[in-house]
Image (cartoon, rainbow, N blue to C red; front, side, top):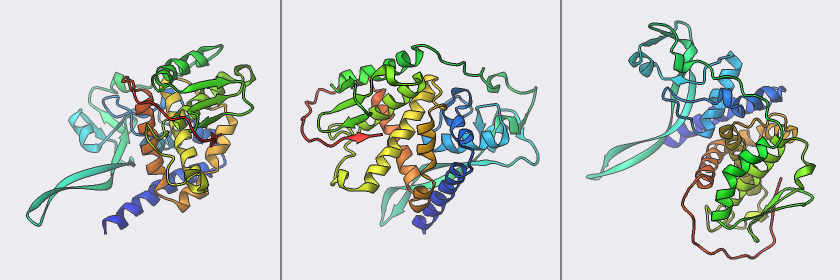
Length: 308
């Protein structure tokens, strides 16, 4: 029964995202979750996991909300507000847990559930709309070397700590687990700084899957098209989220837009993929932003590569 309910929620979530991907207006799909001005957060300003970021961004775009903040019905009451009559909620999906008694022992059971959320603009507030929930100023166009500096401020400490080689001048972008190297085309060959930053972030997320880090490339990984495709989804979700957090907007990268739009059919065939990929992308970003250095020595062997 629990597995059946979980799969129902997986399918509901996947249908929401897949329908947005198939809408035919790709910029409307991409813009919400890569623009910092519309990056969803809770009433305290804390960001949601990647999966829920996409869901709330889709809802905000569709209903033209300007506020980033999302709140439950109960929390709105606690904060002095009340959901305006006729407003409909947006659902987010979370892993919950509770303790149960089984055979005289207490066990912790984990289950997949959902919560109903309301945008701050769907709530009538005592004393007027809270200033802290107002929409942030629009993200200004990024010019010159700003994107290059921002992405390297984020990636360089991680690359140095884990002794990952970053090399320019290649014909295509790739990550090689065997040599633990990221290869990128020459910097001058990129049309826009956003495209460079997104590509570098994508390959960096791939590098977190190395066997001495998060070990995602196992069990004949390179011989399985499905595993390879899933890893590409992890990398694209992680890269887009990292750029959003850095205030870089990669919406102009048409390759990324087209890439994401190709996932609708696969997501419907594998409803659990979006949840799992979002979770893996979150872990990858946690590792990239981690301050501790790893002292483990890495073996350099093999020739397989992961490329865009």
